[in-house]
Length: 224
Length: 244
Image 1 (cartoon, rainbow over the protein chains, first blue to last red):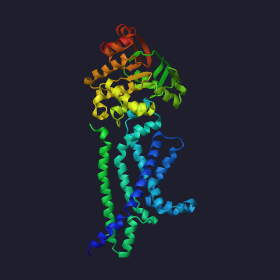
Image 2 (tube, rainbow over the protein chains, first blue to last red):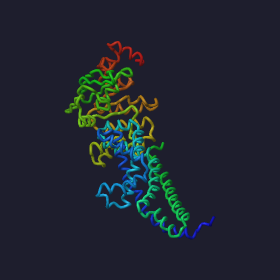
Image 3 (cartoon, helix red, strand yellow):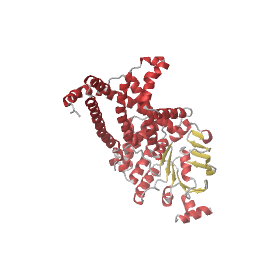
Image 4 (cartoon, each protein chain N blue to C red):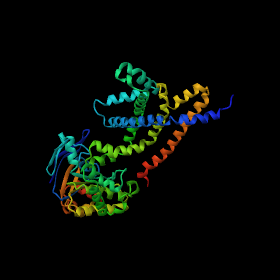
């Protein structure tokens, strides 16, 4: 057993930190897009639009039923062979697309469950004052469903941050890719990947703190 | 003028409303009484399509809706002419007392926000809850929540206010304040259709009492007649049971 090369690790920290913005960009972009797509699918699953329902179910089934890595390879390496307009797609875009589709399938299910968890009386009160279906969803049901779904959604966001490391397999130099390149030069694989692991860990822990604040904020209306 | 003709609601094969005919004059206060499960609440819920009736015509002012072929637009129009007070209050849990009242004014009636806020504060004063404007429902007592519920309905200035057993879910200590508020609403000559088990209250504020049993209107008339000199046997039995 050899000793850890601490100097090397400390020197590597700023290098890897330089890629944190890219990781966060992919995760935040993926999360925002996934939230939008998941909300649309969840609402569809609740009100069941004829002709669309089976499509949404198929989508959810496929993207929950196959590994993220396989999906990313399908998009980045596979699809451009079939759809020529995709040959220009870069790794970051493909990664965001893959993360969006993959996580939206999971999130749609938890948002759907959260919508179902909003008390029936809330729907009826909204209907009774003459709201349209869309107004009811936007102003009454979804805000309350958000509170129910928030802890699960934050978990998916954490998964998504960690999932961005797979963009490295699409040739994107993000935190993981950068560490890989560094280690290939120094042969200090353990040190390099340990630095990456710790930085991910700290990011996720920071997010956990944020989650507590978010929950307090969302529960504000429900405090006695 | 509000008119209901042949209103019919079946759940599976059971007729919960068996062809209800009812006319209500503007400003009239009609109280519906009757045993549990006779369709009183369903009548109210069908009038604004919270439950969808299978047949019948509902007319409120110049709007007439045929239940059998009511479009989405018909239903919205009908709901916008009625205001509903729920047994379980059903305040929007994610909105403060003030926002609960403003919601329909801003989102549905498209009134300017400042306007809606002024109206909400005015209504909160009338309901004696101006100090609770920024409280969320979870922080209010049952009685306070129901007063906000009534305030939300008052602010709509709808042609018809529907009250679905507004005091049934309340602890006894809060019933009085809610009935007091309803009396004040009644004094403003609002058109009210009230389902309640509070016979004494009915006697006090009703212009007309309607007795329902088995999905039909069995007897109706001024409270003095229906409550004190009932002609129908079922009504007599019902009044004896509730201790009148």
